[in-house]
Length: 141
Ligand code: CO
Image (cartoon, rainbow, N blue to C red; front, top):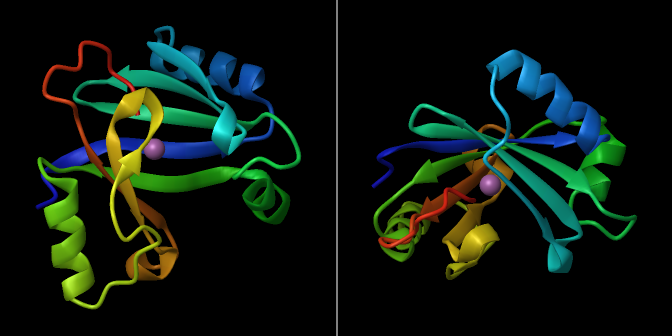
């Protein structure tokens, strides 16, 4: 099942300003920065112990997070839980009647398997299930 909080996703209007703010807050540079063209998102990861902070900026008006930024102006976007088997966890949770956005896992940033539950499953917070690659050498998400 859900074994830990893998990362917390935070949507930001200005990714460079956000990186500066979190660099000051956490006292370290980000570990990974990646543009996911298909989602129109730039993702920046900061390591915090066994968890991460994922900053998400839009690369254009067609970005997957553009509507969220427009509606809420940024802030908590999703909580990602780590699981050893994202498909089994997704099946178990949907079997309990929780609404999902994905019916099967897909490849997220860094090639990891991810699936999303609808925000209504978690009191309005988008929920990501993510499965680390067993041989992943680079922390991404
Ligand atoms: Co994420």
